[in-house]
Amino acid sequence: MPIIKRFGWLLIWPAGLVLGFIAANKNDPYLIALRGPGNIALAVGSVVVVIVLVRRGRWRQGVTGRFLVLLWCLPLLAVLSAQASFEWRKHAVLQTDAAPARVLGQHFIVGYSSFPEVAALAEKGLIAGIYITKHNVTGTTADTLKAEIADLQDRRRAAGLPPLVVAADQEGGIVSHLAPPLTKLPSLSTLVDLALDNRSATAETYGRVHGRELAALGVNLNLAPVLDLRPETKRNRFDFNTLIGYRAISDDPAIVAGIAQSYVDGLAASGVGAAVKHFPGLGRVGADTHHFSANLDTSVEQLEASDWRPFRDVLAGSKAHLMIGHVTLTAVDPDRPASHSRLVVDGIIRKKWNYQGVVMTDDLVMGAIYQHNVCTAVVEALNAGVDLLLVAFDGAQFYRIFTCAAEAFAQGKLDAATLRNSETRLTGAVLVD
Image (cartoon, rainbow, N blue to C red; front, side, top):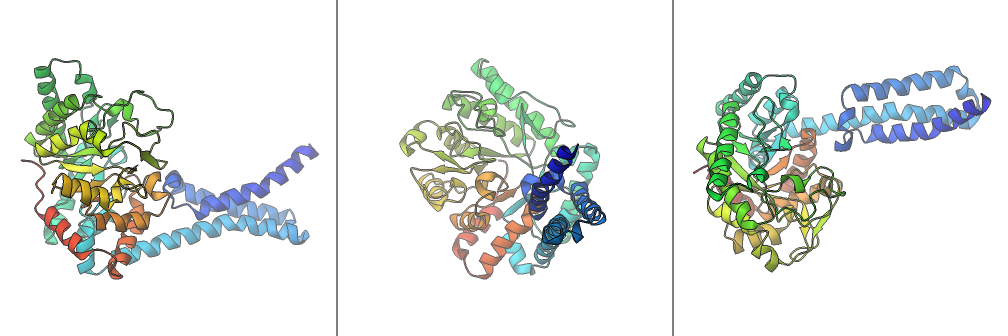
């Protein structure tokens, strides 16, 4: 028993350090599960341990004992400090002057958990759109969500602002974030074995079903379809969340383009736009950009002949937006991911392809971006000519990300001509034909 007790007292030191570190980083996306009740439990636990230590006389046991007590004060202080920092940044963003708010706000689509919070952002023009996902439909009804979206659109109209982009991930298959309450359809990859005419007709039917149901909610942009070519190995042990082997339609560019085009046409029939993804392609990438940096080490010539054909074909045949992923296209710009590379966005997409539609990033709250210098990524993306920046998984990170853009704007670090061109694209953007 004395050995167990002594071992327990030894563990209390690293436990205090670990909880202090977690508390100090409580606003990190990886710790989103600890928010709310988790933070309260962390703070209360810290206080309880301090009380127990003091009652057991640790404070009177010299420098070591006092240091242990102070160590266990750290989680409480760190939680309070991190929360104060978050609230201060949030307050500063909400107080942004109207002119920069509207210049910068038109570039952000944000996920949310709190309706009053996102309503304030929408009314002030600090965002261009919202992202709807699983937690927005869990524990509620489709009618409630529809009423919330309608309310946000009414607030925008009253403020003299353009309608919100309302985006969702409803691809079918394993990415059916709004099913239920919406219908869960199979992945588009299941259509590959059908005869050509039946394949196209069924893909369009899937698009019509998704489009009709999304439009009924008030969603006007579906972040689909996936145009990445299917990798040789369906399951990659380094791919934890993207799971592109299950989501990609085919390894044949022509089949991908044909099915995707029909699906996009189906969405458009109900007034819902598409955002094709994830350029420059994830099929050849080993790492999962949700967590890690990833390189695409293939020549431009080879990509143009295969992986990029579906993107060019569908963009040419529709009003679809283009979503850029966070892989580094090493043959073009080895120093940064494609999502904020001017050489990729302006050099290839705008100039070489002459695509003048809307370009958006994949979620900025992904490890390939957020665990590095997210401020640099935001500034470089806007200066590269990216039109919409997505902050989806953890909408609370919007305040940090917007602050990065606002500080760069105030310091003259954002290219004015590029912002004007982007505003022109966004103002004239048409989601469907």
